[in-house]
Structures are given as C-alpha cells and as structure tokens.
View 1 (cartoon, rainbow, N blue to C red):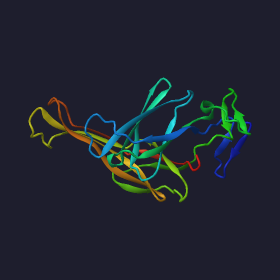
View 2 (tube, rainbow, N blue to C red):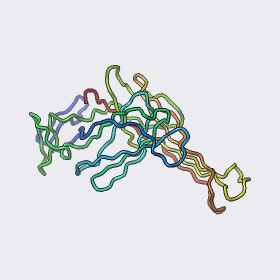
View 3 (tube, rainbow, N blue to C red):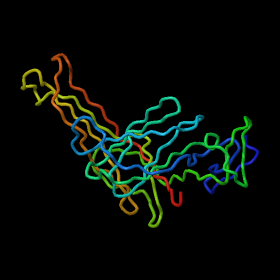
View 4 (tube, rainbow, N blue to C red):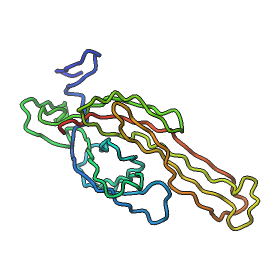
Length: 239
C-alpha cells in the first residue's frame, strides 16, 4: 500500500510510491532507409538499435504523421535493443521521430522538486520526467483497411505504440490444387498493415511485404497465421 497516492477522477493512480508509469528515456529521429536483402513489394524494412539502461523492457513509440509505418519485431542482446520497422517504400528517405519509454528507476533522477521511491529504494516518480500519456487503446478486430477513431486533437503531437503488430503469413499450394509441378509447388505470402494519422483518426492500410514461389517437399501442408494487432496512441506534445 502506497503512503502517498494521487488519483484522477476515474480513481486511477497517477503517482504513487508503489506505481511507475513509463517516461521518456530516449528520443530522436531516424531516416527511413531500406535495408531488406530480398525484393519486397509495397514495403521496405529498417532496423535500428539503441543501448539502454537495464531494469525494465523499453516501449517504442513512432511519430504519427503521413508516413505509413509499423513496428514489427524487437530483439535484445545484452543492453542493446533492436527494432524492426516496416514502412511504405515510397516514403524512403523521410525522417521519423521516435520515443523510448522506460520506468523512472531505469531512467534515473532528473532532479525534480517532487520525487518518490518505493520500499526497495527504487525511484517511482520524478516531476522533471516526461511521462507516457496514452490517449487511445485500440484492439484491432479486422484484416481490412479502415479508419479508426482515436480522438487525436488538432495542434497536439502523437506517437504510435505497436503493442502487437498486425501480420498475415500464408504458405499455400501454387496455384490452388497444386497443378504446378516441382520444385515450385507453394506460394509464400507475408503481409502487414501500416498506420498514419489523419486528423483525429488512425488510418490502417494493407501492405504486401513479399510474395514468392518456393520449393517445398510434397509432404508439406498449407499453413497460415495472422494477428489483427493492438495499438496505443500516445500524446508526445512538447516531448
């Protein structure tokens, strides 16, 4: 039980000595640079890495604007985190803002006039840190292009957290019925959805990553896997 708690009107803890919200640990820009080693159709792939302090898993937020973007994978090697992004290849060369959120005990003291620690001596709040302001949580339920109400306000700056990336992978007989002879018996397809901001809304658009004929043993069966995705919209105005 916290000795000090500050609650909002919904009885949600905003500040407490046993609660930590994510705060900005790193911010910066990246130039969208295609790094794929094989041909991709509608998207390009880019990876970028940061060395970060320990103690908690970081949350990556990508600036929302007109660039169709999604965060697909996160890899960890020691203290280095590497993120894989997919973006519309027509936007290569554009500059994108990013924000990395971690809990205050990982970021460290910022010298705020109000600071709080938990019973283990870990920093849980510093008034000089900039905290994650989630304004929309979107559980996607379809695999189609759509415009999602996200409540974004004119004049505010927002970023997207891909809590679960949307994807659709298929390994199917080529063509249906398998009339094509060996060795190219299967068609492998991988798709994702990228996101942009349009006024108050989050726009989701289909992007084919690749479609290839592949060699496969005749005993292999058709396979498919997909996830609709989960997105968070974060207000990063003045961050």
